[in-house]
Amino acid sequence: MSQNYSSSVVNDFLHGSKSLNLPCELTIEQTHFSCTKILRLLPRKRLVLQAEAEQQQAVLKLFAKANKGEREYNRELRGHQLALASGVNVPQLLTSDDNVDHCFAIAYQLLDDAESFSAEGVRNKPENINKLLKMMAKMHEYGIFQDDIHLDNLMLHRSDVYLIDLGSVKCEHENKPLSKQTSLHNLARLVAQFFPLEQAEILKLLPTYYQQRQWSWNDDDHYQFVKTLKSVWTKRKLDYLSKCFRNCTMTTYSHTFSREYAFRANFLPDNPTELIENIEQLMTTGKMLKAGNSATVVLVEMAGKQVVIKRYNIKSMWHLLRRTLRMSRAAMSWRNANLLEFINLPTLKPLGFIEQRMGWFRHTAYFISEYHESVELLDEYQRRQPTNDELEQINNIFMLMQNSQISHGDLKAQNLLIDDQGKVILIDLDAMQEHRSERQFYKAFNNDKKRFLRNWQDLKVKEIFTSLLF
Image 1 (spheres, rainbow, N blue to C red):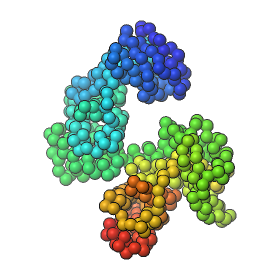
Image 2 (image 1 turned 30 degrees about the vertical axis):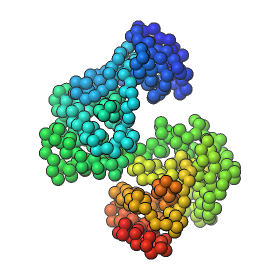
Image 3 (image 1 turned 135 degrees about the horizontal axis):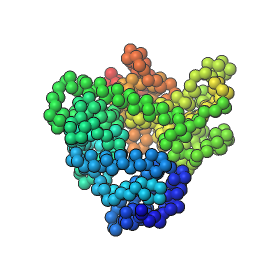
């Protein structure tokens, strides 16, 4: 049994505290660690710390015994063993201990200066994707796969790809290749972690994986993989959107008789009641951006950030009756902004929404987003013509809408903004729709394009956009 000098920290973790006092000292199997940083905290379940021992940087994983810790500890050790045997790169296992203050503990070497594949500069290089595909082929050839595959579990360290979070490594038959169905489903889950425009580029590189597995690659193989990818991507998208309307690590959510709200969990303190009850007063202190009949838009400071609050107004009793049983425009904007973030279509970062209700009946609603200094596209291009980079961004916006079968519903040029860095973003999302019917989508999408073109008085600019969109 290890002697442990961080009883208070471990005790706080085991009792569900979200705030732990570091630095602390921890001893695992006679190795003394100075812990300096929390990398991940799941109260009462798992704690991941950055530490130093004998001038070596390390990552410590603690699993609470009371919450299936033994199972997670054994899976982690088994996953490390399997991944190492398959020939893929994994962090060096420094030590492990099955009794550290009611926890199981594992220490790995820290990969200095490693970058996650979630970093744009890593995942956008074809040579890195090829290395990643070769690593996947090695694992699958050995009979293993990572069940919880996402880009933060894949690291680039000194030009090599490393696999981390080894507790999610599963084995079909050790040292016997995975079945083709399991292999391609796991590969599709990897590709689905990338944004849609990136997926299109990765599909061009897939022959790398097939060559490693000594499989054929032809049009039929391409079609079958795309079909699998679409199914996996749709499931991942729906799982993500469901998190916008439930309590989870991403979202603080509540639904009562008198109100419904959701906020990004890292935006507000645990209890947002004060904001909700005083939001009208807060709006009076802000800068008016729009005082319309259907919506009032105000710029305010909240939680140390400049944010935009958009209140959706009820214009009349008839308007109230028409909208009261439908999802509010604020909730629609919240869902749609999260969807656009998911597909990497630039928009104002969604921070939350509030609905005032009486049971099933909704009335006033508010959508809150980050403020981004920018001007309307229409105003900007009255002074100058668009650059090639800006045209490419606008084209990508329409391409992503088409690939995702999304129509905007009110795509006037004022609903596209551009900042002083030339970044184009889409706003005003309460009428946006995802379409299941291809026919209905193209009808709505063509209306979006026509609505966008209707604004332009400068014939040269109008001609440029007509050529781009049609």
